Length: 128
Image (tube, rainbow, N blue to C red; front, top):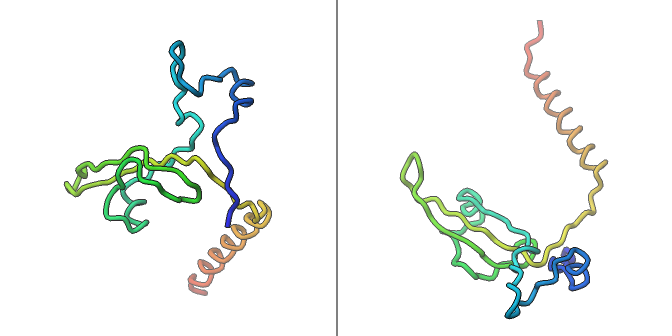
């Protein structure tokens, strides 16, 4: 399980950035909470791959390699086939990253994939 961190800035971080209007007062507007959140937009093909029949209603709590809620969702007609196309935007408030794999290991994996593909192409060429 990936450890998750709260993405909201602390009062000290907001003050250091000159943005300390988290709470609305009579003389100052509220700072939108979305400013600190991470937005993830899912298009129709993402929603289908997740096995959902359509977009979830706004405010639905979700756990998506982080915790958040649906901020926006909807359905529109497809451009070429008139089939419905869904979309959702999820706002993550807590998120985490598992960085256990090093960049060198990823490069080695890619290098191996390229070599395997080149070998497969070479094996298909007829010999003269």
